[in-house]
Amino acid sequence: MKFLFVHQNFPGQFLHIVRHLVTDDRHEVLFITEPNANELPGVRKVPYLRPPQNVESTHIAARELDNGARRAEAVFKAGFGLRHLGFNPDIIIGHHGWGEMLNLRDLWPDTPMLGYMEFYYQHDKADVGFDPEFPADPLDFPRIRAKNALNHIALNLGGTGQTPTAWQLSTYPAWARPLIDVIWEGVDLELCSPDPTVRRKTLKIGDMTIRPTDKLVTYVSRDLEPYRGFHVMMRALPPLMRARKDVKVVMIGGDGVSYGSAPQQGGTWREVMLKEVGADIDPDRVVFPGRVNYGTYLAALRRSDAHVYLTYPFVASWSLRESLAIGCPVIGSDTEPVREFITHGSNGLLTPCLEPKKLARTILDLLDNRDLTRVLRSNARAYAEERLQMKDYLAQYCSVIEGLTGQDPTPGAKPKAVVPRIRRTVRGGPGSRLRTRVVEAAE
Image (cartoon, rainbow, N blue to C red; front, side, top):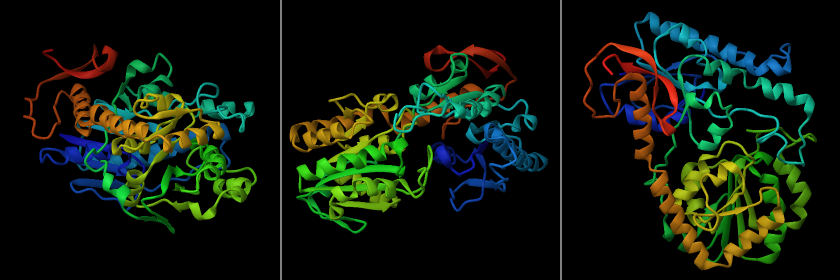
């Protein structure tokens, strides 16, 4: 089969499925993306230059659409070159969030399209206005609503959508959900595995040394910001560190802004929070190593005595899945995306997202309870083995692709005879929802 993937930051969410497909010599995989240094054997990258973004002359409410239209035009040009060279994909798979795929239907009108639908923006039922410390501005509601312009165009391209969790699917309007499949993402359980011996060794992260006698509390986020509860975690540190002198804290994450806004007063959220609580915490027992390599990240999680994962009602991070797979005793925010993964008292603990005193108390109770820690570690790993198997994720992904193309892309699968196909609305997929797919004419 011929696959065309699209994501501005290769390989994006498609790392595992692309790796899976290229193990079969009968597949040809091309990937349209912005230039970057990432490489995968067997994948041919087709770069496009990033067009101007956030043009000031464009109305602020229309900038998301304008950005997407510019990207769509650049990707169309890359695709046009491919078609001119004779490449015609059997399926197009990509992320709809940046608008890159919007014009590809004009090049390949009959090619099945599977688009990653990550989140439907709302101004009153999810992340916006969730935290009263940062109240929503009604004047910003038009911009938030307009962010869904790309979602709406994508949903009307005639393809099928995919999303990784039931909660993310629930953010979409009822009329859109039958067009979107939930493909529950998996974790490499061999790579993300427990290693109890790490807790018996001395570990160095940044300029901090963690000894076997220390209690290690970990926190991970792409960037240290309120959307991921960074301000709550920081405010939990003073009572936590006063209560136990053996606690050390590792806060992994960059100083940028991935979600939400930068501080109004300027600077980074780390600087803002250190100014607020820095005098009440022991700087020798808290380290901010920034973004670390994957090995250091895994070592921190394996050594962790309590791993904190907080988030507004928004997209769940990969670190939540990976911390469960490693068997971390996880303390998560009691928000919808986290409750989809964690059952309180079974494979983790839940705490109110915006209450630092309760977070500190939950951490201390966990550190004092060896039996609970042992149960949470064991159940977290068992949950991952049951629900987060990479092979299950890849099998489901290949099943969706087969439903759209009539060909089983599973490496090693026997190719099917080429037969005429028609597009028809059929029942299939999770919950037997109605969706349009390509089916064999003889069906």
